[in-house]
Image (tube, rainbow, N blue to C red):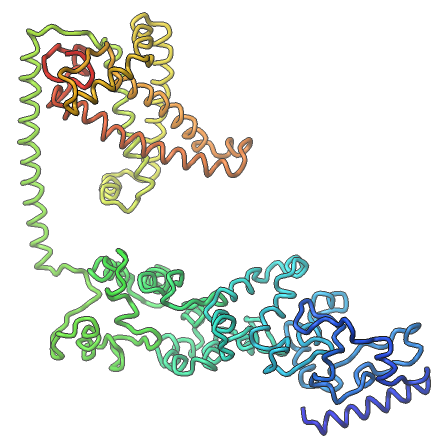
Length: 626
């Protein structure tokens, strides 16, 4: 607004104030105001929330040419008894006032006015400086603090629950905010650079600066070249045609939490962009049906060396943007496209500089196997199955032959009874149910694993997996209950239970056994009916069965569990179930299977689980009988 216009308006205000003064009391001067409203002890500017007690800075503000009554019109010496009218900034700033009236900040009713900003909410009351003055509330690095008065307040969030509650916090972690506050770059975007100053409109409004159809122009205020590249790309052309599904600036970069693409947390970071930005659209069945896109683009990329290396963490292997461009993305049929047939040698040459410019580069986003290669693949699949299958069969033949010979060799040896027929059956039920639980349990935690996909192809759907897992769990718990009664009520079971109780002698046997294998003892110590190894295994099974049983039941019936468990316990329960399963599985693989198959005394197989009898051989035993 021109100074002439301000002067004219101020004159009219002064004349009106004079008339009101004559009518209602004597008009007071600025000196009269400062008699009471002394600037001593005034708060410094820029202390938020904003204060009106900053007259000490009024003489340096942009309004220093005015007197108090130019704004506080109608103030007389009787204003202590009769409150003066509210200051009306729009009497001078008519354009800004009109913009505010049409903005999202204009209250729909007087009752709502408490929750909406007024002029001095953002500009201050007396300490109003130009936006280029570091003391100004609208100085670029200060703008987010001004906006946070409302957008970070509990009252605002309660009144407008649908508004993003993390706006200012997200912005303060962005590259724009860091540039403003950490490097002092005043050209970096503040809130008003994107949303506007007085004419702020909701993003859904067609005239809003942050409406998806206007974003390229808004961002283009700073990123002009990037904006032009985007507008001429396939995405920009679709946007110009009114397509609401095409990605815009904020889709890829974010709205307020905009990070440098080199930042590991950015969705545009090299190893994440293909999976997090491009994939949601180009791997979407809905989008493919709607626009005729091919859904194999993502799958063929991820199966390629580039995709596998990127998923492995490589920042040099090509991602989608490396080949297709960042903002200048065009269809391969466009001669300007980086993936146009004529431009592929140059595009690939970014990483492979020795490639010939006349090189014939075939289709990229296709299955890696041609028809001829598929025939070779099938041939090799049969060769692999028959070769490796034959090897496995041959090795099993040798192994079972060794087991048979071992059983024959042990016929004439004295034997110690370890298990009766009942206990042998219990062990086999335990082994089968445990193996089934492991397979069906871990299948849900790694659905993309090859062995899980193989089982799925054989008919193990999620419903089948879930059912089998529960049946195996019930079998294990029933077995556990049966075993408890067995060791209490059966004489043989009680004998074994007493024998399984750890004793001080087990520590001595353990210590001497370790010394023997270190070459410090000449002989292994005499073991007991059950060695310390078997005792550890037994009580580990008891512990694991109880823990897995309790946590499994709670996961089976979450509705029942939620009725008495605190919410945090559900996550703890699932974590215990998962990691106890890991512990049990690897303990069996590393410890128990070694003792059954690989231990020098028992190799190639511990036949005690078949016969219940253990032959007294002279071979070394891990702390057991000799």
